Image (spheres, protein in one colour):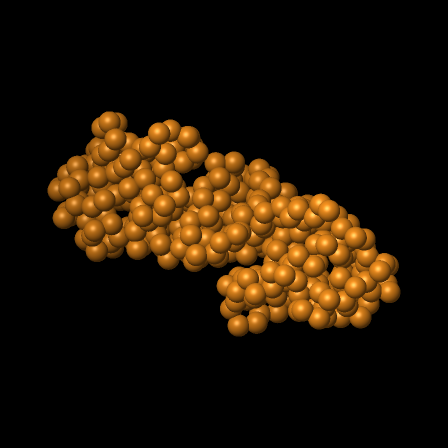
Length: 379
Ligand SMILES: [Zn+2]
């Protein structure tokens, strides 16, 4: 997180809570866990404050030397924290493109708040892939010297809601939570896990933010070219990859965001869904455009809008890539092989449809998790 140390702190250096907070914030920056910005004259007051430890003053003088770079970050990030001297409670406001969270200094007297941001996602593979998206976002935006620092916290199902509530109520940690929408089509409702977390999300507790992704689940964010590289030599998986490629070139490319990429989709599932559900309406509409795709669907079933074999329908729109596909993707990214998948190579695999989504995710993750290299203050 980018912490902006407001001018009022410089005038309150006679207060023990403010000094304690500034010591902790300096420690957090020395460990590289957060980015810090303050005006030149504010930093000057810290550097000249005899009550502050030598180590903390060293941190602030190094920040003083690197101010121009930090100015650029302020304009880029869509979230930042403003630390103020007086204890007037927590608040948040929107300033241009950025949500500014105001936190009184006394919250930083506990060192918990300077630790890495907690990241709640479905599981560790989800967290790893989101981190990759954020790192590629840094590349696209040419943001150098920033590290993505997250402490993954296992969510999934009802655990997500409990974990989010616990962290939100504690007011001790920064926390970002990403939720699968589980939407089966554009107008379908969001799933129960996402809904229950959004219901308990309290905007008056700005240390935490939860975010429902704009696609069905994380597998829908993974580029087809990445799936293709992973599936080479596996004819079953390649069938799904070929379908995704065709779909992306078609007039119903949007369907890729909602397709069940793990399990695949049969015509029967659409035709048997209750006609007043959004899943049925959206997919019945898409079926009008599906015939140019090379799929194994009986023309008779498609035209009659009834699957002849009902539950035994073998009108396969697409097979899936399997339950463990995300795990395989993360292993491919993290495995140090000779033809290792570099961030640059992954960035090139992201097509236009996904790029907008990745940029949106990237700016949120980067804002909440930006840290940097450890600072040496020896000597
Ligand atoms: Zn059929």
